[in-house]
Image 1 (tube, rainbow, N blue to C red):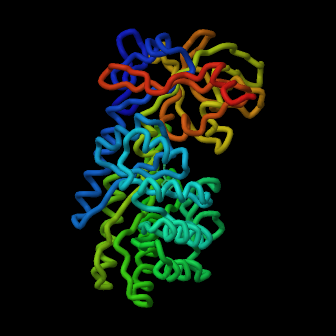
Image 2: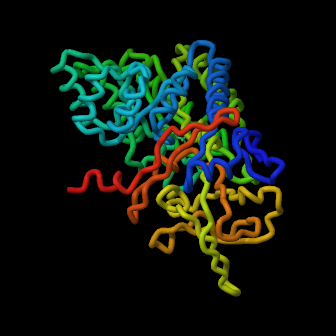
Image 3: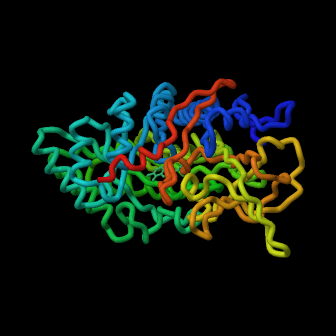
Length: 430
Ligand SMILES: *Cc1c(COP(=O)(O)O)cnc(C)c1O
C-alpha cells in the first residue's frame, strides 16, 4: 500500500491518518476523501524536480480538470503552481478561489467566443490556441478591447503513446490542436505572429494520459523543438515557452510500475538541453501540466455495501450505494482499481467479486473479478486512487446526488464540497 494509507489497530483503513470508517459514519457514503498531505507532496516533487532539472526556468501547471473545486485551487496556489483550465466553469471556479489570473492557462478545442471574452476580461495569463478559427476570434476580440493576449499553439506531435485509444491525443487523428505533417501548424504559427491582439509566446503538446514509458515524452520534446527551430529559421521568431503537457502514469494497482516523476523530468530535460545545445538555440522556459499525478493517489472513495448477490457458477455481485455517477472510469475505459473492505482491512482478500453500482445500467460496475475480503451488507468499501477524474467526472444520472468531498490533513478532516441534496437536483427545474 502507498505510504499515506495504513491499517489501524481495529483493522480499519486509514487515509492521511484518518480512520475511513469514522469518516463514513460522520459524513455518510458515498464519500470522496482527499489527503492534503499527499497532494502537497506530489506538488512539491514535481516543482522541485522541474526547478532542479531546468535551471533556466520551468513551471508546473496543475491540470485542474482532474479535480476541480475551490479548495484545490487554494492548495496549488499555496504550493506555487500555475493551473490550466479547459472551460469557463473551471476558470470561474479558479478565479472564485482567488487563484491569480496571470498563472492560468486556458485550454480547449472549442472555446466559445464568450469563454474567450471571459479570459480576456479577467486577464488570464495564456490561452492555448487549438485552431485557426479560435485564433481569428481571439484576435478580433482582443483587438476590439485593446488588449494583447499571450498565446501558445497546441501542436499534435504525432506520437503514439501506447495508451488507451480514448486517452491518446497526440496523433494526427485527434480533435486537439494543429497537425505538423499537413503544414497546418506552420500556417498557425505565421498567423499568430501577424494577427493583432495576439502575442505568440510558445507551443504546447499533450500526448496522452496514464503513460508509463519515458520514450514518448522524449520523442515529443524532440519533435516540438524541431518545429520550434524550423519556425525560428523561417520566421526569425524563437519561442520563449515550451509546454510539454501532462500524462504521467500513476499506480492504480500494486502491479503497476510507473516511472518515477523525477526520472521523467531528468530524461526529458536531457533531451531538451542536448537539442538546444546542438542547434545553438536558447533553451525555452519549460512547463508541464500534470493532473492525475497530483491528485490521483490522494483520493479514496468510500461506499456502503448493500446487497450481495451470489450467482452460483457465475459470479458474486457486491452492490454499493454509488457507482458510475461518482466514478464513470470503469464504464468509460475499463479502468483498474484496487478495492479494500475498509472495516476489515487487516483480513485477507479471499473472495473474487464484481463490485456494482446502483444505477439502472448493466455496465454500472466499479470493478469486475477483483479480490476482496468477505463482505456483508453494511460493510464499508474503499476504492483506492480515485482522486483524479472521479469527482470531476461525476453526474446526476438516475438523479443520484453527487457525494461530498472531505479533505484530510494529518488525521484531521474537513468538508470541502457539500453533498448534493434532493433540492439541489431540483434547483434548475422549472
Ligand atoms: C488532461 C490534460 C492534462 C493532464 O493530464 P494527466 O494525465 O491528468 O496528467 C494536461 N494537459 C492537457 C492539455 C490535458 O488535456
